[in-house]
Length: 437
Image (cartoon, rainbow, N blue to C red; front, side):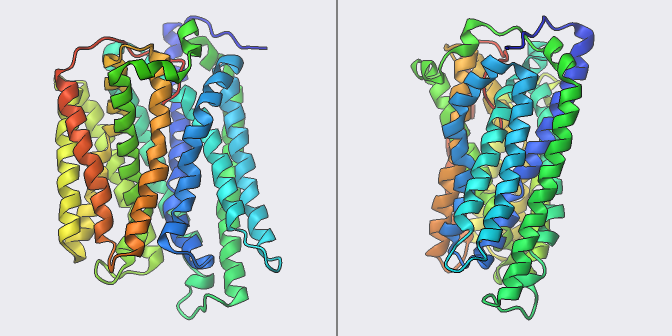
């Protein structure tokens, strides 16, 4: 039976906003585990950079495959039920990964494909989670503050991405094959590292289970505050292909997510490399938290700035230009200069996704729901660009040339921001369709 949300009472909107914002933390936390996980599987399964970045590919390709079915499921189940189904799916994915590592112990069996399957299932749940959460947050309040509101929720997303590496790196990147005197081919060392991967994802699965119970208890509040679905909310994202701004926005999301994830996923190995900081792998993995933490601080600052008279498009111009410049610095330098320039990019990434999302919704001539669906499809950039970066890393003496990939992405985003600052506003931000990172 489909849940039918009632018209939002003002007194319930704030509480619903608080409940939904907890979901931003959850998917930010689990997404940030991919970075240290790449460093872990690369050593445990003896992979190249390109092979290791298949973890990212398995994660972000789910956005392209699952986004349209997720939108259909949302319209059928309603917000709270869809969110609970998403969290249960994520728990299932967390259980697949330990099964895969156990199967790996069998003679002639490689558990890495099973790990990729588990990540794909988790990411499919995250896709459904974001299908409702991002546009729902944008709609839970006045349109004029939608940019700031979505940036505020994304602040908690960044809090999750900051804590993720800090907690996961010591678990995934110490002991076993990462011990100082370890031999990668030692079965005992390899087994210890596989069990560390199990522990990390079983803990995350438990967290998602608790969050599902929490959302279940809050389901009536969320449904009461959610906007009433319309016929437009059920339209295919393909309808948005008729709007140049919807297509441009999806392209911008593609390059933004691809650039951000390429940096975040290879940053552990980059900081660990001798020509950069030459620190232990676990220490480098923990330092990735500064990259995501910069995004957390930047989203708070950006959200506050957007409550002033500074246009969101102007802030986006500044951030994309600086991010591109920092990438250029990384490609031309080494040591601490390159390391901290790479980490600093996180701060300027901060407002990009939610701002691109809302700017596109305002300028698209297609229905908001269809536009949002096309935007979430663009997140597959996180599957494509890191793979290109991994291939470059495999054929380069250092990882510095990898940063040409996000450099190109940010240059395209500068063009998007400049054009958005001059474009006519057509639409308005409403809920009921996918979107989010």
